[in-house]
Length: 235
Image (cartoon, rainbow, N blue to C red; front, side, top):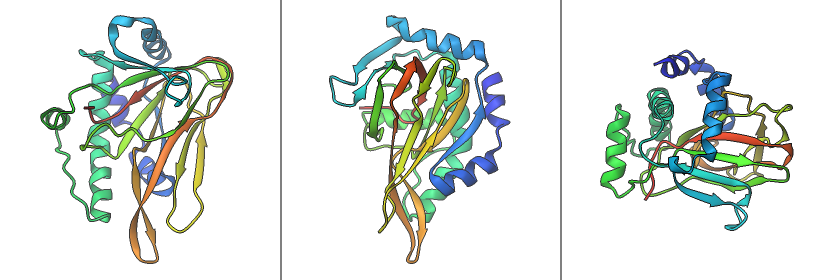
């Protein structure tokens, strides 16, 4: 339960406020250094993964990422469910502002069962690995009709020591305005919460949906690894 306790101890009012301002928010530390190192080392264990994506081959950028197979590592299972408990109220509030359905039950396992019943049965937590010159194109993680509007990335390397560059980037397409980028450095064991697809923004005519995409800037040196926690499963 230690990961769940750490997630519960984060400053959720501040996180929620920052999400409302720019659509992403630094959340704080959720993994100890040894835990982050252990998670990063899993990248080289083929038996843990259902799929490996070479980003250059698919023109997604440069680098690789790997989707975990079931059973998921316990620490991943726990973090996913822990973040759900605190992000679901934010998602429901966003849905209300946009006058949209909020289909997300309180229980995370029930939500995953809903995904599976809809044909989204493949797990989506993933590890990402970047070396010098690698980057990730702006994108959205949409894997089916059922989508949770928030997700989490956790740093598994030390910026400035293990790698340079490689900032986490979000870009918001604002209504009737130029797009707005936000770049963040993610520390070892630190989490960033961000918008999966779109978020509510207030304008002169009330609330509207602002599409958002995310990616990673070019890694200038060293190696960068992160854990991605998508809170819906894939077709």
